[in-house]
Image (cartoon, rainbow, N blue to C red; front, side, top):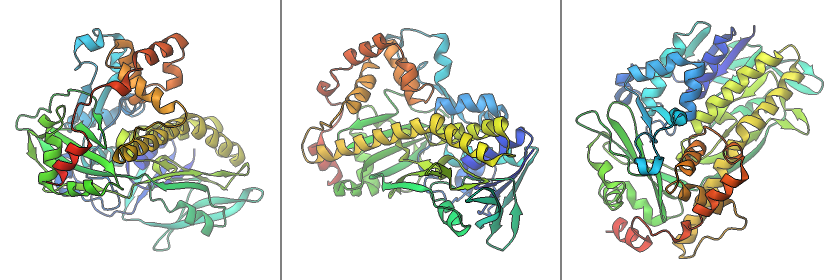
Length: 471
């Protein structure tokens, strides 16, 4: 078995460490934040993860995450629920007129979710207690250590060097330092090629606040957790211990919406949305509107001109690729990626670095790349739609991708089979290719959803929104 160093103690790093240790590898996890991890019950108040931009913003764990976690790390699911995580099934809570009644496969749509500090505290405790995992907090990585080449002309990583000068050897370094990972610089300093990087500002800004009920319940769910209202979207995410978050998402270019930093204007906007207003009926646990902006979409390709940029290194989760988090897919895609890494090591080992690198690149491309691309496409279309509505123009993109996506979700409100198809895609339970493998079902969905552009608005128009946020 291998000696593995995982850099980064966030969700991706913790997941990778536990999965690899359970396969018998000797794993050392390095986290630069020296702060002691609090108990889950104290995490919201006591933990400040300054290196994690979205740590105190809205958070949700998709059904796919729960499915993979129950199969691979069931002890974590148990610990989450003991910490008050919410087990939620949106099919079970929907009217029978929409669902057509319960079905055996509906368990696939169950989530177990919590606020990010609570969730990460549970994960950190589980990793610290896992045989084969050594967690070293307060150790910042300054670069990579390179050794003799395992492939001709390709740099080979043999460990990491801390900022204090300590060399920590490894048969494999797994980088999970997140969306701001310095890995390209580390690789270049170690004599490797830089990965090919696609990078752009996502163009979105988030304005969020959390609430708590007096009786431990969460608000009734009266529609999708993510809803579009013209030039803004609203997120309503139930969480642990009777808490929940509300987020307003706007275009970063929409200067009028910057007034949503003001609690009164933010509250007035949410109050104007019929399916969201009742989510305000709780005790605020944030004393301000939490804002997250300058969110980057980034993708890194570690195979260039047919060869890996380096051997002995693997980037997972947000260190590999990250997007705007409005669809809530980050943790699920990250866990899928970590499982793929574990499975690749099972099948190839590390004796032949060329074989491992090729297999790892192929697994990344086939398992998680499609979800990343689909998420990026949705975000680009939504931002373009917002910009068109600000200009007072209909959004009519070239191609039919956006029309198909909107038709699927509009059809979900009209047919139980279409509802489950949409939820399977939203929750990453199954990909679109699998869901719509039967052409007849795909055509039925498009036919039922064809009227999505003519559906009456469920909330204020642009002019009404402007009057609210500028009052």
